[in-house]
Length: 66
Image (cartoon, rainbow, N blue to C red):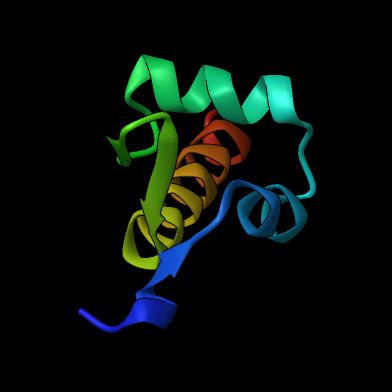
């Protein structure tokens, strides 16, 4: 895993266009896989991409349900 495969909180907030409280909620609930080193969250880019993919699939299912 390369250094650019890990995103900072600010990068994820900008990428997902969400605020800090929303991001912390996703991290604490486990919806977004990440880990902490000391007090600093480390968020693999792959986890963010998987979260977006799951969210898109979920939205498509809701829209296609009659």
